[in-house]
Length: 233
Image (tube, rainbow, N blue to C red; front, side, top):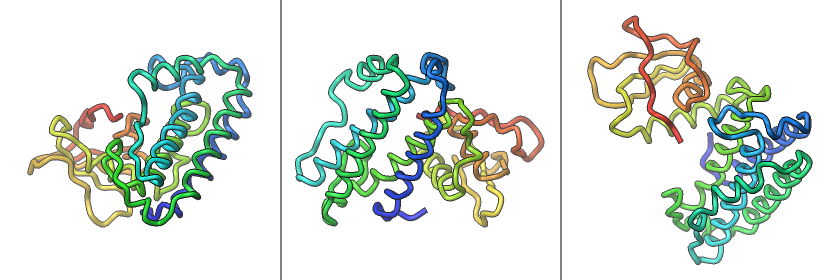
């Protein structure tokens, strides 16, 4: 997947429209039903997606103006999610649409040099925001638990997510060698000559390591149980 923020923004548009279609087709009562995230209802997930867009809008605006913006004030993230979770479904749908439009407008206003402004929240230049937003939309679409699964991710998205998880794996992550089907070079977590080799479809590996899949279609060599991944995000 390209690093070009303008290309990734089109992917954010596409992913957001797919999420909106899912949300619009829900039974209104589903807002109060459990999502796949422990302790969160579907309404919590939908609210988080909208407020996350506003957060990245703030960061992009700061990058454009050259004045670093705060992602969230202390306690803001959780309080906003809790406050918005119980709203009617139609309000959630409009909120996600409108917050995405604000995000898209902020991105469109970015001059080329502003994409190089470093954002401490993501530890990257502002050019990393479109990917970060795409990841939020795609992963939390799955977390709704309403028919959209990692199998619906694009191959490019799944591979980039997989590589990000591998690169960011900390010292507590169990060592393993990942062999996604169709990828020439393995991905390695940890330094262990005897680490198990885990193979399978890229989407399944990304889902498993991100906590969005059980790894049921993965293989492990030597024969045995899959390692237990550390909690991701």
